[in-house]
Structures are given as structure tokens and as C-alpha cells.
Length: 359
Image (cartoon, rainbow, N blue to C red; front, side, top):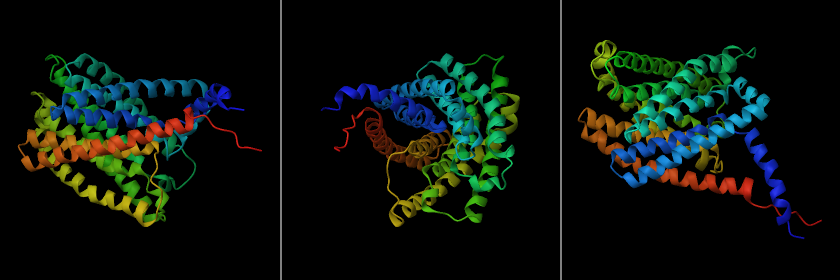
């Protein structure tokens, strides 16, 4: 007897299980598609940029609906994620994804949408910035918590820097009454993001130096270390271009100079992270298969490209711009491979009928 008639009935439980186990960091898909769309728009490849923008908006809407459904139906599972230092920092992808989408919409001329999404992201940043570190790290009785530190903690820094980038984007079209406030938000978020980067870098380094490093431990989210540094470059470049405001005037030289230094450090991290991937997959033969964490690789690739293009043009550094433009196509290729892998994964786990084994 064919298994096809029972397939629709089986689909419901599969979807329910997928929602229950949804990773908090899935908004990294929105971040990845959005930032590559930004890079393609900077390169004036409008049709491909528009396609990535559509994917960015669609993924944001779908993941938001699934997350709200998970909150309603599987609240206990979501609460456990907040208590898990290995997963809790993934909630910050909501903030970064919201701002990346907003910034890209602003490039299309929809700065009202950018401002609205910035308001949502800033509110979430103000709340989650205290809640997640407390529930996942400081509020735990278990010690030492540092053994759970991993690359996903850097998303905390990315979220902060995304607020700075979005604030600078809105400031360009804001009235004189709003510009000082937006400048203040941008500089504060940029500064907080840098301090958080230093703190997280210490925690993750302690984890790597204190506990054994197994190949399966070096997951894709360690690439966020480069992405966090790259978005700090972009945020700094955008702040340096902001119109005159007391907070910007007081820090413009520091921010502009630091952005070049941060780009250099992000460039230095690139081969280090590639070597870690080589060690994991080629030396120790850990299979390379689709997992949601792969979007934590794609976003840093796209972010590094955009940061290089923007910094190179803003500071007249042609070699930096050239590197960013070339690396953008690496990000596009990686995005395509990951997206195809995701579609196959969804088909295999959700949609493909399962033929019962013969007795």
C-alpha cells in the first residue's frame, strides 16, 4: 500500500517538532541574505540585490511567525534556551536581522521602515542585552560557566553594532531635532559593542585554552568573531559620515581611525577561521552538512565584504574596496550553497514522504 495517503497527516507532527526545536539563532538567515543584498546594491547589481532583499524580508516574516508560535505552544522549550549559554545568545540574531532588513530597506528609499524596525530592534536590544547574559551566564548556579562560551556569544556584539548602523542610516534623513539623539544612540551602541567584543573574546579564549578542543566543538558560529569585527568597521564608517552632532564631533577622529584598525584585525581573523574549518572537516573528517549555524558563516562573509567596500570608498582606500568587492562573490557563492542545502534539508525533514519499512 502506498504511503502517500498518510503523508498529510504526518506533516503536522513534523512541522510541530520543527517549531519546538527551532534554534533561536535562525534570524542569521535574515542577516546573511540582507547584508549580501546590501553589498550587491553597493555594486549596483540591482536585480540580484532585489532578489536577496525579497529572501531577507520573507525569511524575517517566516522566522518571526515561527518564533511567536514557539513562544505560544512551546514556552518551556524557549525558556530552556534562555537558560542555555550555548543557545541563548542566538536570540540576539533577532535584533541584528531586524536592523539589517531595515538598513537595506532604507537603501531603497523606505527610511520610514528603517526607523520603525530600528525602534523595535533598539527596544529588544535594551531588554535582551540584560536578560540573556543574566539567564544564561550570571544567574546560573553552575560554575565555571566559561566552559560553555562559544562563538555565538559574539552575536551580542553584532546586535549592538547593528543598532549603531541603523541609527546612522536613519540620521541621514532625520530632522535637526532627532539628529543629536540618533548620534548619541549610534556612538553608545558602537562603544558598547566594542567593549562587549573584548569581553566575549576573553571568555571564548579562556574556553579554548582551558578545556580540550574537540573537532565537533568548533562549530560554524565561531565565524561570528569576524562578522562582529566587520560590522564594527561598517558602524564606525557610518558614524564618521554622520552630520554634525556633539557626540559625533567628539569621537569622529577616534571612530574613523579605529575602523581601519578593526578592518585589519577582521582580515587577520579570516585565515585563522578558515584554518579551523580545515582542521575540523578535512583533518578530522567531521561531515560538512547543512545546519542552521551555517548562516553564522555566511553573514560574516557578507559583512566583511560590505565593510571593505564601504570603508574603502569612505576613506579612499582602493585596496580595501577591491578586497571587499572580490570577497562579496565568495559570500554570494557560499550563500547559494547554503540556501540549496537548506531547501534540501527542509524537503528531507518536512515534506518528503517516508516510505514505511517492509516487515
